[in-house]
Length: 441
Length: 170
Image 1: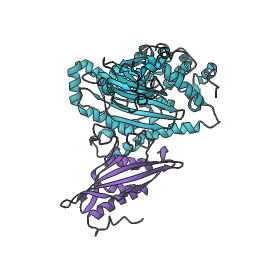
Image 2: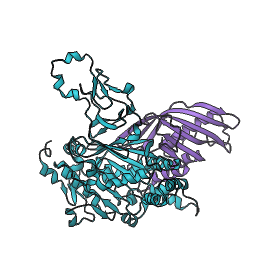
Image 3: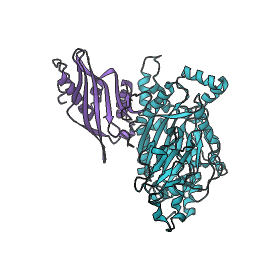
Image 4: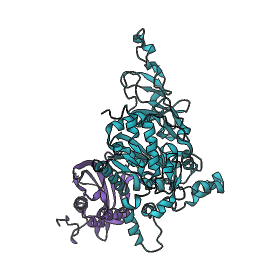
């Protein structure tokens, strides 16, 4: 099981300019290396700072395989700490979220306590450590904060202590988070509406690829969105479309629509579809919301903010966001063929509740384990996971609209049916997996 | 087909017994994939609701696992039959195992009932089977002399778990 660990050339050979090897989805050693390299050296989404509004509030999750705590300190700063006692490794908090009592974290096993900045506070019977070398051990450092960036409420962390800076890594793609936050009249978001957690029995990369795949909706979603469209077409003319119809029907727009919406690609695997318009463009307007936006930003800027209809922005590898309906989906890889997808929704602070109702409806229709659209997609991912066992080919084609000019850079704007966002993801994948520190985007 | 517990019998009087019978019938129609008959059990303004959170007060500003009106239920039924519903090319089947339904509330004047039914739900697709536990709350009303479901609320025991696809209806 050591075909790839010490062989960067073998890893590079898995990614051709126009195709990738099936081992990317099937090989457990590569999955281990992804957790050690890709998910450690890049900036991974941890949570939103509104989940921990007050000092001592915590949210616990994982970065790859690393258990972490997102915690707000007494200085009101949000930190990401290892969820691991410096003594024997006990996971310190076991609830998904909560409040640390008495302003400290206390280990449930031997009662070591930590301050909210992670520093070691007390160790019972400390005298027993005198002259043992304990003072020189790493344990005294307590819980060592991970490099963390809080970008307008979105908290990312990097497991590696050294590596590319946050803004260098994401570059101009951060404009999608800007647009999402700007959509709140008060310029901030709050997590609201619950989190959907959908287990996908497929490799995480299939999910992330699909977010900018504009060639599948009219095929994969014909049975769900196509049925919604057919049933609605038989409604009497002039019947106002309910929200669910507005949200379903664009999934089965034609190829021309999806081609022309456009895709913007950045270096390091980031991209977004919906440069010109998207499936979210034609939702009914909410007059009261537009008035509040105009009051907050002025007519012109409010229109510019609301005029963006970016479909899915991929913050490679962990986070994908949908600005126009203020929702995000987070990929949490569990094993080479198992991935947890979390769907979170936000309240746009200062906006009427209709906006929250809209995103909650969309998330239920599209992202739930009970979603017909979700069933369509997951069936395809699972089918890839199983179909790739065929020895008829070891390669997965990513040729669509490939040109030799991409060898220099992938960044640019393209027709959205181009597979260049995926080629960009795998170019970044190969570089990081083969040992390179990601460069500026 | 088999007995419908007298639900369609014109001589069947709306009563607590018929409310309980309707709950059993509803589960049976789902298990037998008699979706059109199942659909007719629901009033035109009905909702089929499975909250995402325990004690969730509100389906509008909080996400649910299901919150479907008759239009969405119709889309769901038609989708299951669609020749290109690839996730059902290998079809799923389900089995409800109900505890005795209990009448929690009964308004004799209007013949409205609230019926509580704990149940186990098994869904299978070839070699994959999952079992879920839940409590169903049927809000029943009398329309033109017959009981109908206005709201079915399903409290899923592990609503906060990471769940695989649930492709049929609880």
